Structure formats: structure tokens, C-alpha cells
Amino acid sequence: MDPISNMIIMLKNAGLAGKTTVTVPYSKIKNAIGQCLKKEGYISDVSQKTKKDRPILKLSLVYIDKNPKISHIERISKQSRRVYFGVKDIHPVRNGFGLLVLSTPKGILGGKEAKKEQVGGEALFKIW
Image 1 (cartoon, rainbow, N blue to C red):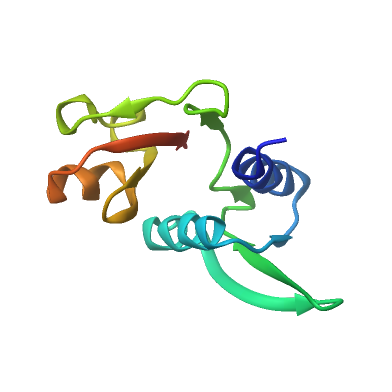
Image 2 (image 1 turned 90 degrees about the vertical axis):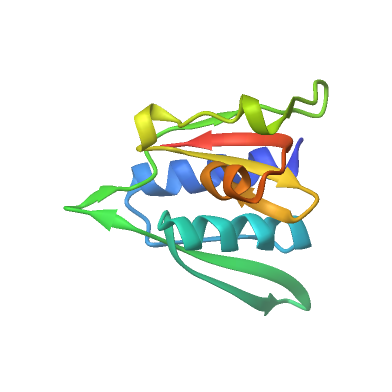
């Protein structure tokens, strides 16, 4: 299965189950996605640990009034179909209440930041 899809679905399911942290196998792109979500306020902490001599990524979820901040996630680009957005194609998600995550030449960026940097790229997922 797609490791990025696996990670974001684990985040969504952990929030709905009331968990405070999620551990996923480490990779550079997952770490970059975690840092982007931390910067946008969807998770509170990203840390790299080792468990049984394997690197893992520990993500701490954010709750607002006992409700998880991550309620929905929609994967855009998949392994079978890649979707690319230019700068003009980047629009606000849920009237600014959501986040579009892009893989750009300048790294993993949120939609607002990518538009500010004037770069497009592969649209990974929407989160709100």
C-alpha cells in the first residue's frame, strides 16, 4: 500500500479513536509531511525515535475541546494517478479552514505557502 496514505489515515483514525500519539515507520518524506502539519497546527510534535533498531516517527495530535483538529483527509495524488497543480491551480481548501499539502521543488509545503513562494507541484492530500 501507499506509505503516505497509510500515514495520513493512521492520523485520522487515531484522532477519531481519541489517541494522543501515532507512531509510523520513518522516512524522509513522512518527516517532511509531519513538519508541514506541525507548522500549520494540525499536530503538536514530531519526533524521531528508535524501536527495536528501526527508526519510527512519533506524531502528537492536536485536540480542540476534546475534538480532534484532523477530521477529514482526502488523498489527491495516488500511486496509480499523479496529480500536479500549477501556482494558478492552488485554491483554499474549505474556504481557508483546510490545508492542501504539496510536494514542490522547495520541499513539502502547504497551499498558502506554495502560492506565496510561487511554486507548484504534486498535490499530495487535503486535510481539514
